[in-house]
Length: 180
Image 1 (cartoon, rainbow, N blue to C red):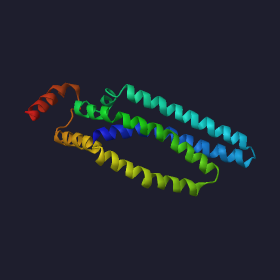
Image 2: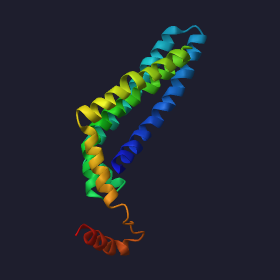
Image 3: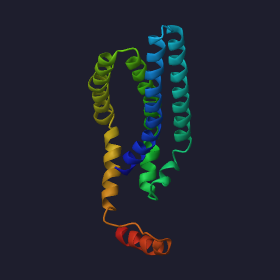
Image 4: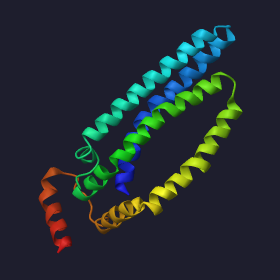
């Protein structure tokens, strides 16, 4: 569960950048098309998509490179860190896809294709996302990894983290007693 939250926090960081590019692409493309400059609109589309893709790829590479230590920003638990490390390749793919999708949606909105964007988003969710999630979770047994991590985390849920560094020894002692 916590590994999912860690992944969502990292994914949310990039998504905020992509949503900004979404708005910028929508306005820029709409303005250029309204002014009768389709070549400038096309150039804007290429540039904003390339910049967003570059940022997404860089963040995905950083996540993959730091996958064994990145979760320690959010937690000190080794079990959670291992779960996050195993899920990081999926997070990297998600980062790249979420880096481009909002930009292309913004371009389509700038062209006046709002209904098309809605159909594509709904179609991607129901036709691609849910079946792919079922395939990965049930057929390839990747859902079991998350469930095992959740079970392990629930075991430690009653133990509260210390607020001060001085009480860290007491906290470690409580963890050791709980594991016996």
